[in-house]
Image (cartoon, rainbow, N blue to C red; front, side, top):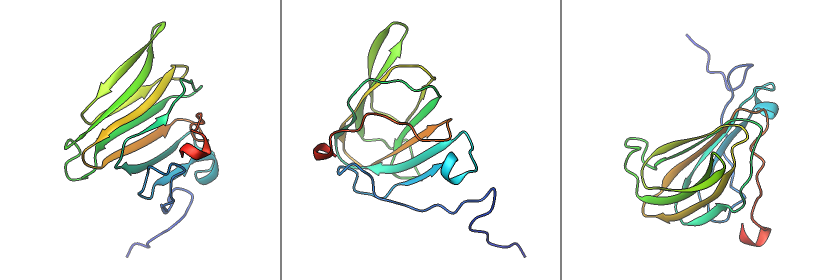
Length: 148
C-alpha cells in the first residue's frame, strides 16, 4: 500500500492564504521555489476573482519568463468565461493594450514591458493563475495600502 506523503523533497502539501488585495475575497494558493521547492526556478499561485479592480497599475519588466492564466472559475468548464480584462504588453518598441474576454494563457518573456492589468468586469468568478520561472515571486508595484 502506498504511503500518503504530505511533504518530501518532491511532494509539497498545498495550503491557502488570503490575498493582499481586498478585492480578492477567496483564499489563494501559492508555492515559492526558494521557500518551498529547494531553490527551483518556479513560483506559482492561483485564486478566484469575483469583482473588478486594477491588479497592477504600473508598466514594469522582469528578468525571467512569466505566464498568466485567466480561465472560467468552474474547473469542469474553464472556457465558460464571463469577464473582461485589459492587459498591456510590450510589442516591439510600443505598448499594446489587449482586451480579453475568453480563457487565455499570456506568455511574458523576460524583459517584456507589461501592465497595467485591469480586471474590468466579472460576470462569474474567474480563475487567475500566475507562474514565473524564478525562485522568488514576481515582484511588481503593488497598489497603495489604502487601495488594496
